[in-house]
Length: 218
Image (cartoon, rainbow, N blue to C red; front, top):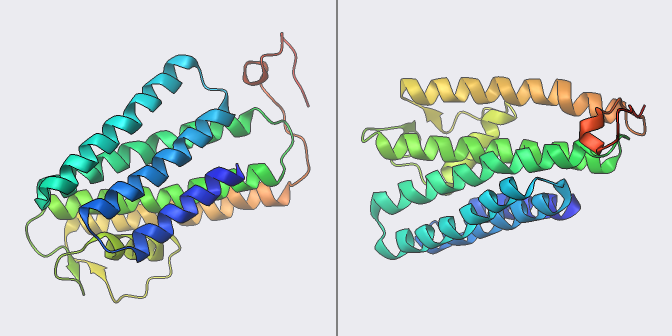
């Protein structure tokens, strides 16, 4: 799980620091795809799910490269949708990997942090799609939001920091920001807090999660 966390952290840093060009978006999708592959490796997913996810990654890369070569808003919208698809699939593999371990340990907490980072990336992609479709002013403080602006706004909203230097102007943008702030706070005070407070403890495991025959591990 440490590898997944490292790759997702690199993706967040790359999104926020790299020049926002078509090719930098290709690198970002590559990092997110590598994180998904790493999560699938340790999750024990069914072959059918694994094949579907592994087909998505090269298709996403090919279309992202084509979008980078052509440029324009179509390329931006395409890579945003593809990135969104990857970060939606990744938590499924991460959660399945966590469910295989009956003891709450540092790997479990790392998985929870991975999902928190994915939430920030997910909402940045959603906001990017919304701002690309909306031709008017989407943010106050940024004429036309681009990658680093979207990620900055997403994580300041997710953590409810709310500096206010960039604010959503449209109704759909404000609704998205409200949803992200609520999810971010609920996630921190419930999921992450519960896992940290129960570190080292065992949890009840469904037999289907471990492959045991009609037994429950406690």
